[in-house]
Length: 451
Image (cartoon, rainbow, N blue to C red; front, side):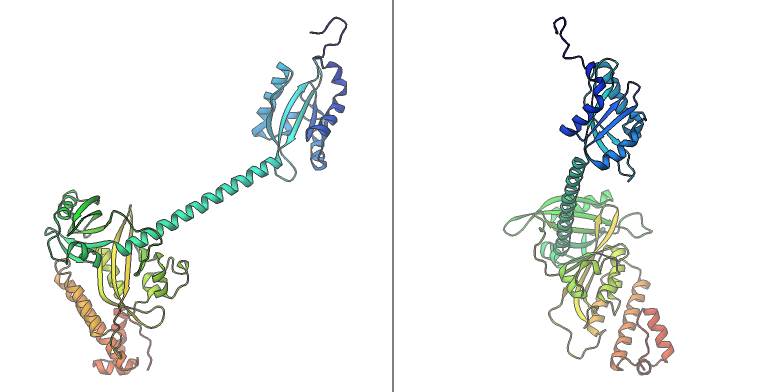
């Protein structure tokens, strides 16, 4: 407390006439901008350390301070003025001033009343440098998150492709609960199609059959020397006009799933419900003659791999209808010379989305030298596949497929023997060229006349 006759050190009234000079002093010592505000809230003087900031802030003189900031921060100025009016000083608040460039200028202000009835001195710090650092930090953090999720997606993709190649898949007929078809992994675990399945698997299938919906559980399978833990999923397969499932698609894998980067020898491809490529492994890229997965994404599988005898199309159609399809020997040829492969196609349970998994294994023993495309070996495999579907399709549909396969084989053989000349092939088949072209169009074969 001041003694009588001594000036009160807390009374700043004596400094009120020096407000502009104080503003300049504050700017030169410890701040970026200082404003002198009248009792009515009008800016009367501006001092700024930065010439560009001073140029813009000079236009605030004569305007209410609250009108120099953006609408979203005007309330902060009003609170600051109220606080100074009540206590003589204010705590620091951040506001934004609009600028001619369109970019807001963030400034943090604290204010001091220079005595009762005196002007208000607002001292501010330009936060643009701080905001820039914060923005760079946020962008760096976002980039790290993007890299993280890209890595996670790549790991998930690699894991899915490895699982597709290594999963045991079989199609089980109802009500017999016997496998009608199975890939090599399923046969190694459960035996050849037609054999009774192990009791734990039969119990699981019976449960899925009664529930009528997809089921996924972990079970244990007794092997010769040990017990194998399996993750097994079962998906009911229903024709469009059937209320009850007619088959079960079973997919099993060891509880320890393949890890990303695990070696996979088979070519693997995952497609959407329309048969367009979603992802593929390196072996599939080599078969397709592609350098990157992006070159294949969104393209039809038959276009990517080449389907000269429509075997991929037939397997795709079977998998859509029955959940699983195999081709003991199929011919593809997108990357140059025809390649013989064993083919498995199966449905993948992916929430409500339907996906199709393709596994192709190049056959070690090529077709005999001089054998044209559409060899009897291909025809025999196709007829065997059709015969395996007895009980799944009515007899007329099976006969129609067998007839088309035989007709396609005969046309391919005639064209090969005629060196691709349409007229000569038609003569061998005992029909005219126009009829041959009509039949080839119906079967989806190329009809370019080579002579």
